[in-house]
Length: 193
Image 1 (tube, rainbow, N blue to C red):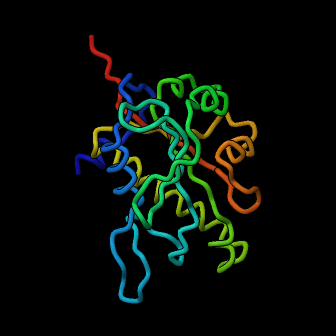
Image 2: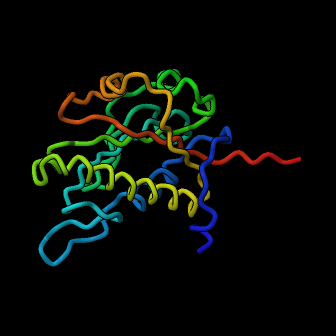
C-alpha cells in the first residue's frame, strides 16, 4: 500500500550513480520473467496483449561505480544486460531532451522500443494500439518498482525532435523497431533545510 500511495515522478537526482544491484532489481521486478504457464508461454511481471511482448528495454548508463558506461539491451529471457556500445552518452541524452535540464543529473535513462511485427502480425493495425497499452503496464511497473527500491523515475515525453536519432544511436533498424518512450532513473535528491 505504501508503495502505491508514495509513487511520484522524480526530477531531482542525487550525484550517486546507479549500482548494478539497483538496476538489476529494477529491471527484473519491472519487466522480468516470473514463470511459464500451463501452455508453455513465458509470463512476465506485466500484462501484454496476446502475450506478444512487443516492447524491448534499453538502459543507457550515464553514471555508475560498477557498471561500464554505455548503452545496453535488457535480455529478459536470460535476465541479463547486453552491452551494445560503451561510452558516456550524457550529452546525447541531454540533446534528445534539451528542454529538461534534470536529464543531465540522471545516472540512467531507460528507453522502450516497439517491435511492430510482434503485435501487428497477430492483430493488424489494432496491434499498434495494444503496444501502447503494454507500455502503460510497463511504465507503471517501473514507477512502482522504483518507489519500492527507493529509486526515483520520471517519464521523458518532451524534447525529442527526431526519434530516429535515438534509434540510430542504439543501432535499431527503422520500420522494424523504434524507440518511443524514455525514463530518467536514479537515486532521488532530497533537499533539506
